[in-house]
Length: 251
Image (cartoon, rainbow, N blue to C red; front, top):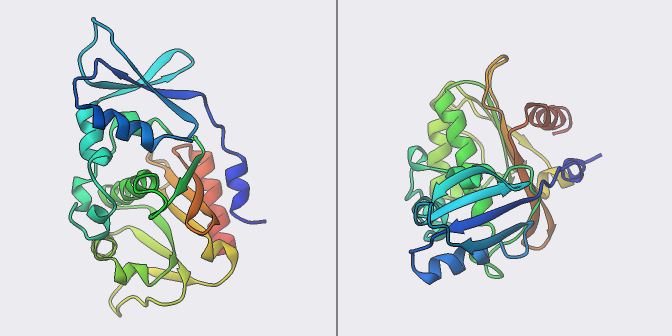
């Protein structure tokens, strides 16, 4: 049994993104379409006179379940690159996940990293930072994060900044990956190191708040091949808790 069984249980709801009354430049629309090309989310563009301009709707079963100004998606993901997060240029408190992206949970995403793609992996990087911010804002609960190689915590400035701040908080932080990084003596971060596939091939960020509180959220992605990933994120408490239980018992 491995983490891959959680990917097999994804619901894959029928959702689409609809851009309403676009006035933003054409390259913005093309960037949005390219980001979701090959994903289980279609992107279309329509004009509706009664609606405001430059809105992005999430539609499921002919119902609008979320909406965001297109500008929010531009600022969050369409006009940025992964260096913004790796270098720490965008701080933890600045991480925003627009409603139109928040409601793409339970969808299976298939992603490639650089150089095959400049943007596909960025969505899951943003969601990862959103989950880390959720833990930091709660100032409680447990955060479990996989890095494949623990060295990334030290090598990536942005990641190092995030986990220093989390280390200074009351959040119970656990990190997973192949050996390399060792926390400083005064750190409360717990490391879990190994070489089994779940350590080497997984990318997860799992936050569980204290019992009785809301805020469960988890992302899981697994490497299918060199720089190719399958993944999803979820807010379902039962799914988040099942994932945390598996990680606690097997890693």
